[in-house]
Length: 67
Image (cartoon, rainbow, N blue to C red):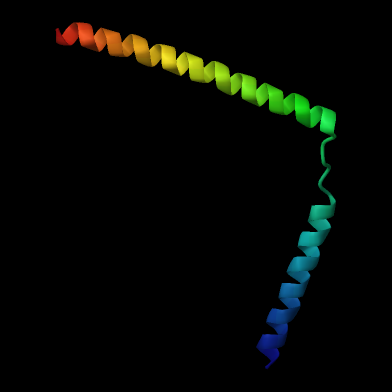
C-alpha cells in the first residue's frame, strides 16, 4: 500500500511541476508569429525551387550520359 501511495504522490508532483513549467512559457504575439510564419514559408519555397532546379539539372546530365 505504501508504494501505491508513493506513486500517487509522485504523479501529483510531476503534474504540479509540469503545470509550473508550462506557466513559464512566454508566448509570442500575433505580429511576430505572422512574420516568422511568412519567413518559414518563404524559405521553404525558395529551398523547394532550388532542390527542383538541382534535380532537373542532374537528371538532364544523367540523360545525356546515358545516350
